[in-house]
Length: 102
Image 1 (cartoon, one colour):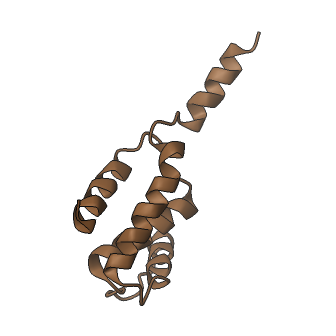
Image 2 (image 1 turned 90 degrees about the vertical axis):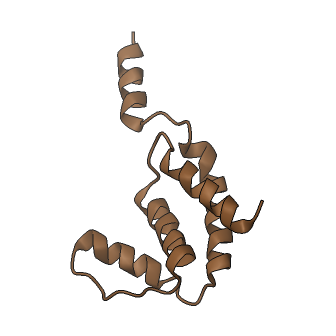
Image 3 (image 1 turned 180 degrees about the horizontal axis):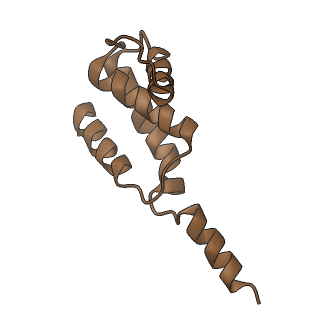
């Protein structure tokens, strides 16, 4: 399987995870994805809080080749996969624990 095919397959898988990674993990995935698809940041710095965080994360990847960003994205997604792919959302786990207490 080519790197592009593997990247596309993994990116699709990440979008279908049952639970959401932490903010830091999401920013890492986001920034690697943007670097892999678009290369170095190519937009002006936005003003919104969330948008600035995304911009800063992507800017931090400046200089990484698109192929290297794809490899890093795949590696990170594989590390996080077992944690989020089939996970139970934390509030459900908590509710289950509370309701199970005798």
